Image 1 (cartoon, each protein chain N blue to C red):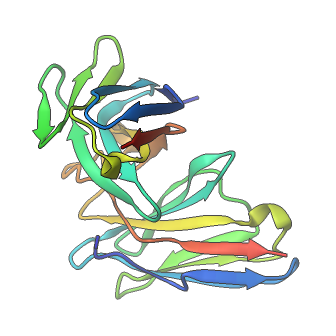
Image 2: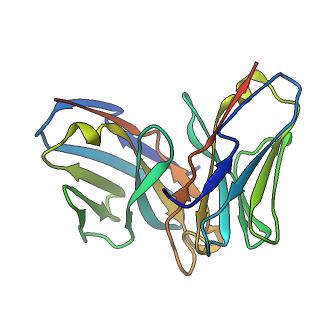
Length: 117
Length: 113
């Protein structure tokens, strides 16, 4: 168990809908990362937060948004869902900024499997 | 554009075999390389490599980084069926881009009894 908690585990919804994925990082971790994993794309970086502030953005669609709250949990909002958004969405956390001063590795949650029908 | 390429994409071996997984990277402001094992759910952390030529070991797994040739290898000796998984490597950026990771597409390892 990595200590990173993601809810829900599975989500099935229809095209055009909006969903919210939730992540609680490991105790003491200030950085939260969101990744999308699909069969043909591998693990794609979406966005990263550090202590409540956005620090890095990857290939995140405009229909997607995220935030990190004062208690350090994070939410990923996906709107106007399309069939192609079906994927496994992972949250990961680290103590500091991986690659930065503390250069700590990421620890992943078990993911939320999103199916858009 | 940052790129991480893993090879082979898929590998099938028998228990007891030794395997070598490769990861090459082209990343600006490279800081370190991470290896993960992914079974059914979350990728689990294996190694972080920052210095060139220093082998890291954990049981039957070991890994080394070559920053001159821009690659890393992950070795698994005396493989077991429980080693069957997807192995992912990721390059970590430093400098002003720290926090960004680029993952390879993974190597699917299948170990038959």
